[in-house]
Every structure is written in structure tokens, then in C-alpha cells.
Length: 160
Image (cartoon, rainbow, N blue to C red; front, side):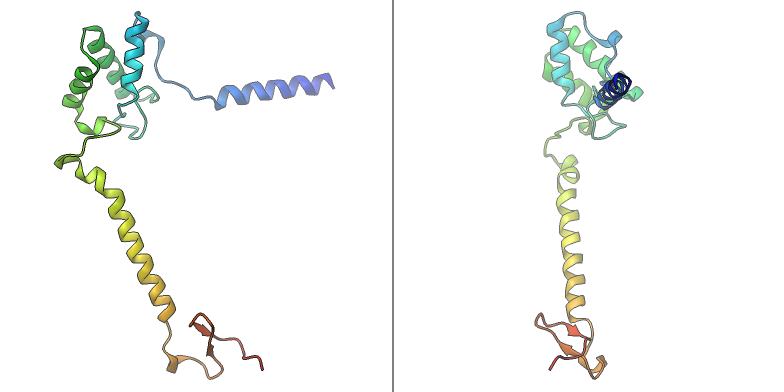
């Protein structure tokens, strides 16, 4: 019984270690000043990894995300404000680096694409449903077919 309990404890430990999110910020990237490091962590939550797309740079293990983290910490350590550090990275990588890009002419596609896709999908679904309900002309129906309560063709024999 003790052996099973130890095995279950080991499995629980492995699951908790493997299921926990792995942050990609390496110890050699961290700033020595805890206040500056906290600022860097706060700012990095707003910056997107340009490779991983919907992951912030602290959660990404991509080499470009490491470069971005180092640049951010370098700018903050040099005395830049949070907005100046973000502006530097935006200038270097574009508005795409922001997890919440501003609504501008060059980011309009990012903002409108989800609504456009939803609209197109809704129109196509409506057309498909309309064709499905109108589907078969009456003259093409077999002699024993009749219309059900919903207005669609019913091929089952009529009940008397």
C-alpha cells in the first residue's frame, strides 16, 4: 500500500511540474534591480512575440523573443520610461509587436479581419440553410412525399 501511495505522489508531482507554465525568461536576462525587473515584466506582458504570434515575449522560447526581452531590459536599464521602451520596440518591429495594437490605417486589417470573417461565414451559412430548405422542387418529389410541419419535404409514408 505504501508503494502505491509513493507512486501516486510521484505521478502527482510529475503532473504538477509538467502542467505548470514554463516562463521563457532566463536568469541571465533578469535585471539586478528588482524594481526595474518588475517594470520589464509589466511591459513585456503587452508585447507579442513576432514568431509565436499570440504569445507575449516572456512566455515565448523563440530566439527573437529572447532578443526582444534583452532589448527591453536594456532600454529600461538605460533609463527609458515604459512608453519609451515600447516605442523603441514598435519602431524596430512595427505595431504588430503590440498585443493590443492601436486602431490606425495600417492596423485596420488586424481589427476588421475577425468581423469580416464572421460576416462572410454568416452569409454563407444563411445561403446554405436557405438552399437546404428550398432544396427540391415539388415536381421532382416522389408521389408519396409530402411536406412536414417545418415546410420541408418528408419522404416517409403518410400516417392515416
